[in-house]
Length: 468
Image (tube, rainbow, N blue to C red; front, side):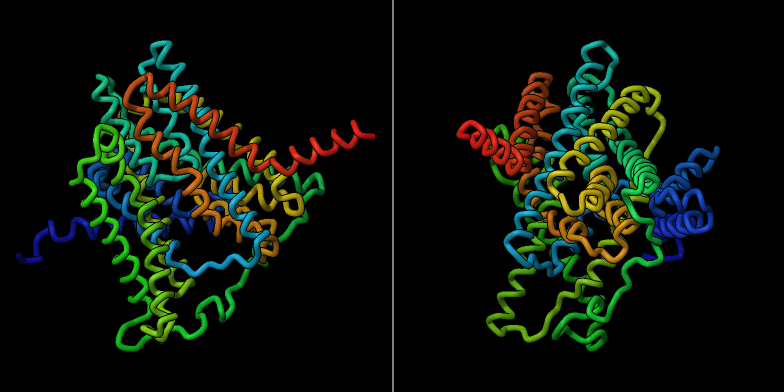
């Protein structure tokens, strides 16, 4: 094989396009005051630039849509692996419970988004608007999970819709919701923040005061050297890729197993979409094995560097957002523009009201810090939540940032039933109705768990009054 042919450059050129778009998006956000105040991620602006470029006659072929979808898919998985490998510590039992409660808020928000989306899509289907009946379930994937999961399950929904004789561009529908989620989280978050500031409920703090990295942020105790026989960054990247390779081997092994009707129809088709979940689980397992080796003195140094893993995950998520947005196609958009608008609008409204209500009771001492961090994440990504939080808590003095980072595992465990239902609901209209009922019941259980202190306190007060 020779490397003087254009084919050898195709994939690299696509990555160069993503890099240029990301840099241009950052320039726009830095230089245009309106965009800077909106807090829209530079990655989203870069993706929107590529969408505009695709709209120019003759330019759409320059951007490879299938390749953008592949990048979105793998960037999601690799980003979660990098986060899972980090050494995070929960310092006390009370903070542990708060992390679990924050995970419950995340999972319950996915559930209520799914309820809202399903109600809308079912109504459109019943009244003959030719929308796939389970399409609304892509709302929590787009808002709550982001472009990666919106793409994964969008493709699965497209397959089930075609089996039902329906034409549904699930990937484009899901990616469009994800892009709208970034706008909702940033714009609505900033508007509400300014309203609270005018009312005197928030003190104005400059983002320039934001947390500055200290020496211990770059390097922990007893870590391997930055550059010896192998560079420290190379070690972090290799660990991430090794864990992700284990995800592939495990998933491929499961595909060859006999799992019955449910496993064949539901679990196997969507297992490839669980790359982020499996990556998290395998990452945690790999990290614990390293800790075991260290306790047994099989290894002497600390190989994991949190700072570099943060940078790897940040890069993966930035590229995921640019590629996911660029992968959106508007060829079929006209068919679902009305339900898309209604689902996104109602999803934003319900998420805002629900997260604000729960945050008031879950985080009594830092209600707004908790709200902005969670609302940003539940409509965009964790980075959106951090950006909003940094505006009012630049030095991360409240537990909000810690809750947001550490709640991931709890959210995955509590939200796992929702992911299973994602593979079950699109199989038939009956399955969709069953899914809606389960979601309502599951949402009630999670909400009661989070509000249990208030509920029991109220009952205790009522008993005291009756006794008196």
